[in-house]
Image (cartoon, rainbow, N blue to C red):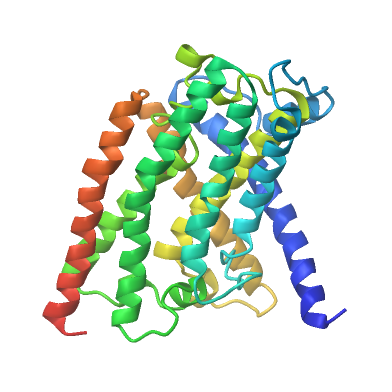
Length: 333
């Protein structure tokens, strides 16, 4: 077997294990921080792991009206696709396992796969609650794709306009932080794009205020209402891994810095410092985009979700893009 292939396979396994561990960690941190903000003690950090272990010991229950093969395959596809995205994102200062000239475009497409798997699982459940949840998931996905695309195109356009090769490559973005390429007007535009991506994150994760596909008070769990046991555990892990993916994407696009470049340290400790710094950034991004927003806001109705993303966030994102472009043309660089 070629050496490069062995390295790729080994890297994919390590990133997969790392992604699952960080996912469980973030699920625990989210529950603790949410409880503290609601003046509750909350569960221990290990509670998500305990819940997952319990779910994996339970039997999968397949409804009588379900399409069994699709019902059981959906959570596997969702988790596998979420882990695959991590292979294209720089983690802790390390180069991504897989890389190419169109990383950002590919990541944007891959981000839809877990949601599509969730939709397929909902329709395959044969439950009216899950069917309504699946329809809402599709509408939500269509709604947030445009502002997400605006953010990615804005970053790539700035890199291309600055003469940096392969602007859609995440390694190029990491090596050339957008903040160093723009002037004052561009910084305002980049800040706006950063906020837009932060607000897109809870919709990608189906978290409050954009959790209309599940909506426990209306749909009793909606798209996941018929899932139990191992299948539910896989979907729970998928949500955790997607949290890691979205937080890592925010870090890669807007905070691609290494602590070892600021603090002198022995060469052997530099990867450790960079990895710890990356984890701190991921926790901070997850806290703001998931926990803080979830505690601060109530659930939107599905028509409000569409309005928020298609009208308000799209216009705000386009404003950020235009500011970045105006900054470039006014400064001439």
